[in-house]
Each structure stands twice: as C-alpha cells, then as structure tokens.
Length: 236
Image 1 (cartoon, helix red, strand yellow):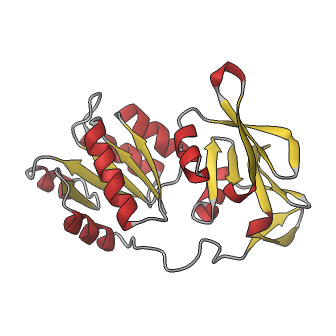
Image 2 (cartoon, rainbow, N blue to C red; image 1 turned 90 degrees about the vertical axis):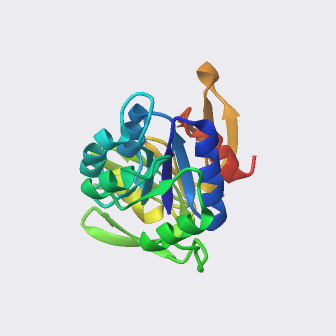
C-alpha cells in the first residue's frame, strides 16, 4: 500500500506518519508540505490513501480535492484538520473520511478499516509471476527476477535478470502492480526492485544515483525528494 501525507506542520506530519507506520508496517509513506507538492506527488506516484491537511500554507486543501480526484479517481482522500466543523465540508466534497488533530489511534484504525486498509498477512512476494505483453506474445517472469523498469518510447522497458522486454504501458501501471511487492519509484522514470539495489552513491550536482545487480554500467538517478525514503527502505 502507498500512502501520502501532506501537511504544512512538520510535527503533525511526523506524528501521523508514525501512527500509520505502527498500524500499517508494510505501507510505503511519502510526505509533502504544500498544495503544490500534493499535486506533484499525485502526478508522479499512484497512491491508495492520500491524507490532506485542509489548512495548507499555499492553498486550502478543499480546493485541491477535485484536481486530485481527476488525477487519480481511485485514490481515497482523507482530510486532516484541527476543527471538527470541517466534517460537513468533507462529506460535501465526497472525500473518504476525515481525522482530527491531535490524532487518536483508535479513530485512525477505524478510518483505515473503513478504507479497506489492514496489516498485510501475506509476504510481499505473494504475487510470484507477472505477465508481460511484448512483441505480440505474453511472457511470464518471476517478480523477484525483475531488476528495474524504466520509461521508454511511450511505454516501458522491463529489465530482468536475463532479458529485457518492452511493453507499451506507462510506468505508473507497473507501480500499481508492483509497488507493494518490494519495488520503489526512485525517480519519475524508474521503478526499482529494492532487493536488487547494489549501490547507492553521491552523483553529480550533489544528487544521488543507484546501480542495480547485473547492470553495473547503468546509472539510475534518484529524485531529490525520494532519497530519504529510499535510504529508510534500504536500511541505510
């Protein structure tokens, strides 16, 4: 499960992330601090749940709802607010739910159950194989053998341990299928298998990049906003 937390107050953002991590330890949680970041995140990454503070510094969260819904119709939006009177507004805008600051863990758990989110009881690799439609045929590859996927010619190139395949689907589609299987969107054009990351290193202009197992000559850039999360996922 992929979750976004957008709040311009760092303490509130950190506390919500902490509670969500306790309740959903397998979830990947991204964070933002403004309306502009909220739109950027939704434009680059598929999210199951989107926690949106109503009183953001640059724009009111209620103004963003329609744009976020248009970008990701299946995403469930939850308002975050310190004022209970916004409950009415939440239902008027047809968001999934709302939670109040300071956060109550029991209320948060109830809301997550309502949204269909729960702790994973299966290993991340429960989907063993993935079907790849390429060159008029369907190839079945082990998920664990996919090293990374990159955007290429209006589709994606899928790099596995032994083969490379082209499929005419957007990288966001692969992120939906593999985001909870140990894969991470390290940059807008790359989806990497975390178990195949060989090296994380400082690259040009103080940015970071990674190298993958079996692809030593390929340098994959890491988005500046992704490096912190990637380090956490890699245990670094």
